[in-house]
Image 1 (cartoon, rainbow, N blue to C red):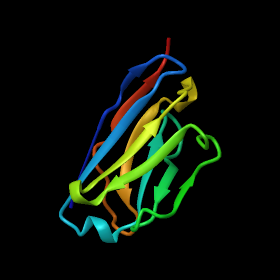
Image 2 (image 1 turned 30 degrees about the vertical axis):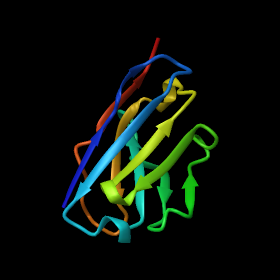
Image 3 (image 1 turned 135 degrees about the horizontal axis):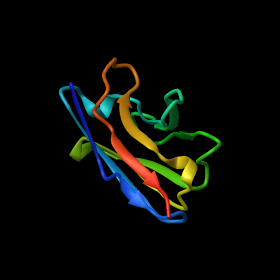
Amino acid sequence: VQLVESGGGLVQPGGSLRLSCVAAGFSFSDYYMAWFRQAPGKARERVASISSSGSSTDYADSVKGRFTISKHDGKNTVYLQMNNLRPEDTAVYFCKAMSLDFWGQGTQVTVSG
């Protein structure tokens, strides 16, 4: 199993980023996928999830209306579009196949300016 996150960076408050996570080693289209984040000194939290079909999504209250999760089965990729970013969104972001006990290396998002 492999999960490779990318797209993080430094952005000013109010800015946008699009994270990508390319999956390999399992049947991506059959799995419920999610994005998590972990800020320094805090527990890892789930911010968004998407069903295997892509027809159902769910978001943490803190990101509703600002973040959008999507997936492309042909590319084995799950995305997280993040708009109107806030300093409190600063964290390492990880993707996960919900029924697999595996984490990628994550991608750092820093909102500051």
